[in-house]
Image 1 (cartoon, rainbow, N blue to C red):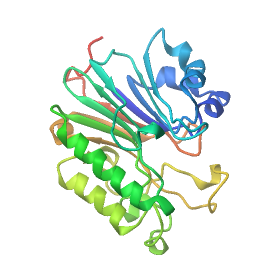
Image 2: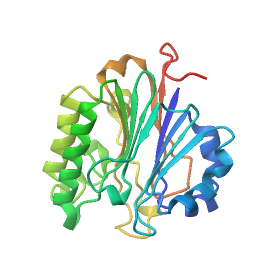
Image 3: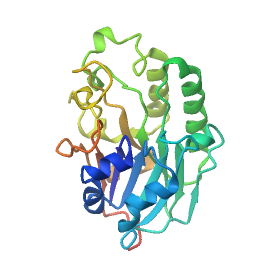
Length: 253
């Protein structure tokens, strides 16, 4: 089974670059963040996938802002949008399957909203801890966890996205038994998922690994591979991919 997570930075803009064909071929469960579209606009882009996938959209109320979508080959038992915090920004989708949950999330950037970001992270991980099955958490955390996860660590310790209090959250996530799937499979690689060269904002050459797929420790021995898909150019983020061993029948075909 393959899980893909991708901050598309506008689903309509990404569609003009060919992202729909990529999504059709990429995975069994696809978590999209920052769709920047209302439900009708997002479905106009994703409708062609409905012959093979079930599509769920959680848009922000504010036009052209935030929002998440879930594209899944198997019908979930349930899908929740009622996260309970920043609900009008469409930042979380929780899907229940027979043997696990998938939590698709788009964490606020921070900056002037750092307090909001920290509260969001607190509510997010408390919600994850309350779920009664193993959990896969995929999305844009807007945090580079370690010095291996950004291009200029020595001068970014007081910069949003690499603040000590932000990194401490991910310390706690890993300390609680969750696995950063890319890092456990690539322990020594300096790697990024957001590329400032492809962004209209930010300093060029300043790159961060903001995107993660965490799995519950009970799924650790099912991790087959975890990669950043650098060859795909649809956004200022790169898609990330997790393959879980077929020894565990996570999805019914």
